[in-house]
Length: 127
Image (cartoon, rainbow, N blue to C red; front, side, top):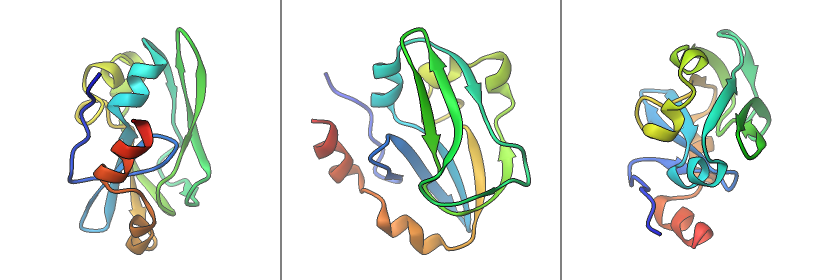
């Protein structure tokens, strides 16, 4: 099976993606992760203003098959959360790289993104 892995993002081994735009990092889970989870029924996200540390848990995603922790790709302050997911968690399945995004972090150090996997490295990991 082939999964969508956009080249313009970095990836975590735990299957989160990060897309940086002017110091703000948008975060979601990958196409592979949503496929493995199955139908997403609940997403728990932090509050705006919460401080996150790279590689620490920021929330939980629950599907009909499993409950998984979500991890921050960078350290910083949560500046936005995707509140649509509370009423429509299936957006994560329908559009994991678009409408299914989870949160945005004002990165303390955007250089942390360099520690993450490239699209090619992530593709190798899930192969």
